[in-house]
Length: 243
Ligand code: SF4
Image (cartoon, rainbow, N blue to C red; front, top):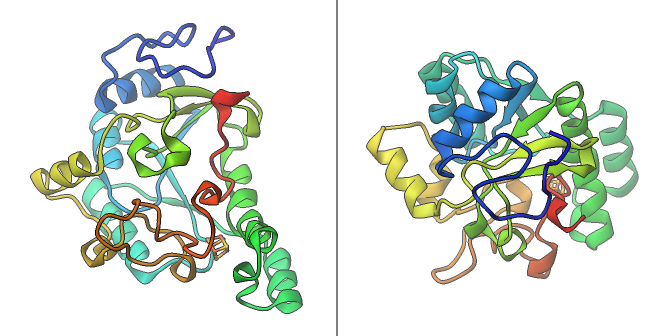
């Protein structure tokens, strides 16, 4: 693993041992054979395509999610449906109570609307810190990120070294898939999905920071819609390939 090339979009990633066809199922088979049980799948419950594919490889794959305290009800409904459908138990990580109390008592419950720094502080407390705990002790993690989701993700590699989390391996099996492919797979396999996606939501995060998009808008335009598009990341996913 020492020669892992960071910054590649190639389907063959030198030094990782992965040299498959780049399809999500193939990447997952390699990743779970290589890293299980020191690997976990991060689920946001917009859809359950990745969980479906991963549980076909390993029914005991670890799945975790972050409950920020501001998620929409539809996200929990999707998570509960996924647990029933795939026979899994999601590992939930919550923010530190004292940090959330300090934030809302000190700055109010909508401080994130005031400016970019305030928004990043909220994301840091509610998302980034819990993620750090979720990844502790792992050698690799799996995300559902796709290149077509946002201009900030156009260069997303299939496999990268996650320098923001101690250099563990970050695997993005869905990188080359489109939103249309996700929808078609979901329908074909009758998978659980987040019902907000039927109401114009193409990217689903905290309820207070997500709105439906208009036709022709970028898929992530509904996230922090009051900010410029180049800022539409919460700190969970750092551009490792630029390091
Ligand atoms: Fe806070 Fe909004 Fe970030 Fe959620 S998305 S953690 S509410 S700023």
